[in-house]
Length: 171
Image 1 (cartoon, rainbow, N blue to C red):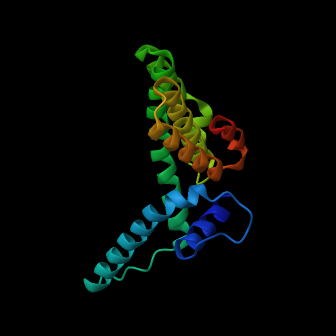
Image 2 (tube, one colour):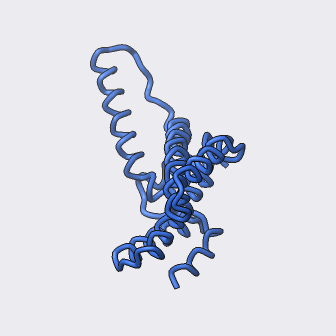
């Protein structure tokens, strides 16, 4: 699965859409960061050519996989923080938030999937963020918060179609 996702990352870097039916939310969030990463790689290669170190151009697909893996590690860490805020918002207890964040940080699923170049961690991040924003909307009932939660829910569904039941919250 990683090689297919890496090829889509590379394709998506230069094109608007993937040719097959796939949720593209992960690639929408990854594209600007990956474009910056490719620019840095190119400048580094040009510098090495300039100082004549004899470096070869890096293999793009391998770089796409490694970049997606690093991106997922950062999303996994951010998910732990967002889960803390979600639990504190719902329960009002910082202790419960720390307990929930600790459980997620030590869970087998989270650790295992956070180092793969797949969309599962991105989906979990978007799900947690969406639920946190909806919990804030329920407590404060602000118009801006509602629209922000609805937009993030749309991104969550766009990340992985199995998150479609979240749309019920927007209705």
